[in-house]
Length: 365
Image (cartoon, rainbow, N blue to C red; front, top):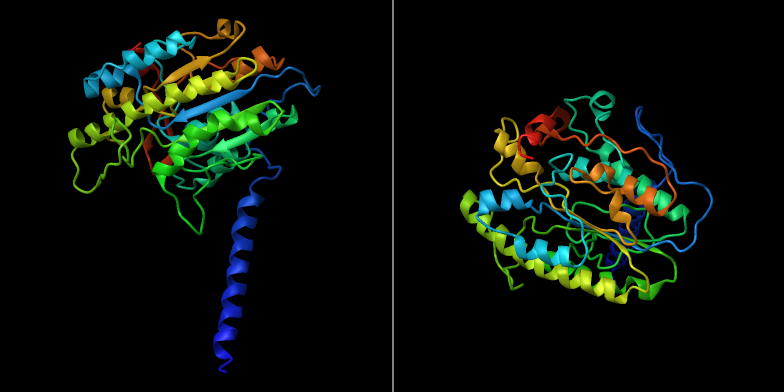
């Protein structure tokens, strides 16, 4: 017998095991105590553990356009979806805008309850290094605080860019170095499994569900049927048709999922439904018009806060204050609310080169 195949097999197996060790070691290393950047505010809940804590569902629909953008850019009136949310008791600012126009800053800003503009000085406005923002996303204060209170933290990432590592469970996690991922099946799994989380634990839950919907790739028509979309040489009008189909499907599944979550809850949960930024099809990042700035920031923002929690909400609230309000109302925090401001990046390749565009957004309110 030729021993060569045996040795090759041993070598290949050893190499693969080493690769797995390095891969998971690097990723798990992110989930450590970190040295926060200068200017970062470490917001902590009171040490005393509380009782009767509400379940919290934070659902991010990536790049879901605000009602104003849908009307102006798509000729689409989203009143049916908005009305269904309103009937269920959601509070929605009349014309909401995100703090940043893309995920890499928007999500860590929301999950750390503060602006990330200190990166402009700490890292530099010409930096293309995305790791500092990613580290704050992976080690965010919202999850750390909730875990300190005994929350069971669950993360669905459903085709979105990444997933925080401070979690107890990652259902529907088909993205791996072995299998890749299928956006359709992962999203359908997320909608299906989200209401079932409470069946698996008696602890209060924090569910982080970040779905790449209606964000491309476009894989659903409005009825949920598969579609095929090729980005090459696509014009803005055609892409918007695909986007709108996927948004209509998103509306249907989101309402179904919210109803299922509430129906399975023994006590009323907190549900936050947001998009991390607006729709950006055709936007010129480096030289945007005022209308493009509005388009990139006009987002979805809806809050289901039981037991009069909505009294602390207000019409101009932005994501940076979302969990300051929630923690103040339900977890005995006393966090000061920040001024609601909006920033643009001069290039999607220079994430820390920020321009304050609050005055532009105020013109559209």
